[in-house]
Length: 442
Image (tube, rainbow, N blue to C red; front, side, top):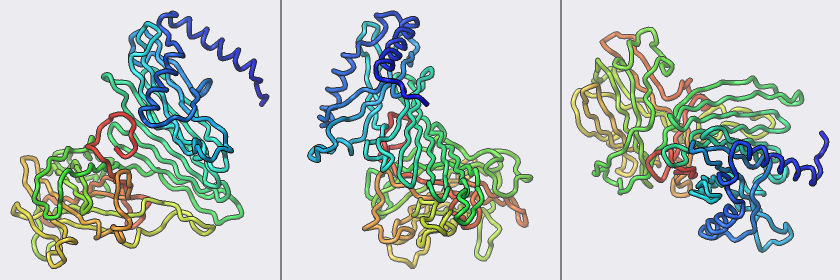
């Protein structure tokens, strides 16, 4: 492919602006100087004083995000300087996406600055990551690519709705340039529906491994608790996540016996603090079969947690990780006849004890558990769970309608034995889940 010289590229950019002028009158476009002034002020507020450049060509796009007939603008904001000047680590500073809503008078009605663009050094030996920005209607898609032996590609999708920018989707792809291992993931943040797919080894000099997936799962987002859970005495309200496990697609066993969402479905809410992870599972079940001593064919909740979110082993004989982390946990909470609280593994110390609460509802029941990090994370004092931490996790509901029933199992991922690749995910967040502006870990 021939490289376009600078003068021709500038002419092409000018022609692009001219074509844009056919769709938007001059007064409905935004003055570039207004954008630059506003960005300088916003960056100073963040304590960033590095010289910056506003993306052009593939790193910018124009559209009418809010459908008011006025041209709006999206572009990368990346930092520049001398690579020899070690006193200014501009190469380690993450870039931003500038999202500008025009006011119809060549000025700016709003300008959002989101930390989506990777830093220059994030590209590894590949160099400065490539970034493209695409506009379509009310949505903006930012794609970036870089890496060393491990190459990566990310895409983030945002939309303008109800006067705000919402982060609605993410896609990622990483692969090894020699072994050929590759994992693709996709997340719909509107309903936290995700998929994961493994591309097997393609290099003839390495052991061949088959492809795997796609695996569909729900991501559980847990918000930080506002209190102290040492004794689990507070009744802190936590909202259900924006999904219901309520279709045949999520049944692992018993599809032929399932009569619909009123027969079996569930919702999940979660919070966390420095001591415990809390999960609340709200189940719709038209026939509850409680457990008694020595009885296994009864209703229960099964929670699988694995502290290691990585799925690929590193090394020539690696490939997919085949076993869970050493401190992984499979917790089965049986449903009882009577409502109330109880201590799971009551003989353990208070700090390691799992506290459970069971409540019957009009449509079924709710079971709430506080699970200490020490039960499934090795040395949580040094491996401290923090905002943005991601773990592997799956919640399953086992349902028996009557004695000797074959039973049904509905799960947040179609878990297969102890295969970590089939586990879902759990992410720790600072605030309750929402489709607010792009903020990592929030």
